[in-house]
Length: 124
Image 1 (tube, rainbow, N blue to C red):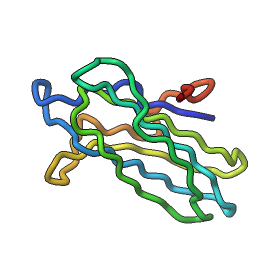
Image 2 (tube, one colour; image 1 turned 90 degrees about the horizontal axis):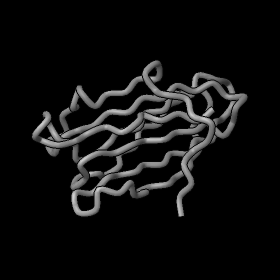
Image 3 (cartoon, rainbow, N blue to C red; image 1 turned 180 degrees about the vertical axis):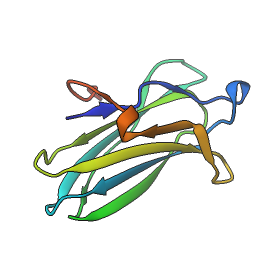
């Protein structure tokens, strides 16, 4: 089942801006999981939702994976995540981090806060 963070505003006018997004995946199952991550940004210049990253990777059984995605220069962003191995049980979380590597707590989205969606947004 795919999930989304929803749109997250990331400007200094409303708090600390994130320069990167951290996506953490914990595979708590005995089988490998294939994960698909899509990161969208809303640049100041166009204010249009734009795909920045689309990546898939394997998270081995009983392990974790933490990845960073650069999103500076966007007024907002959205992360969409899917577990393409539905028989594997995985847990997701995302965090914004500032230019100094500090967590932007207002931009934290835990598994329980992610919104399930019918499908990932199409990217062209």
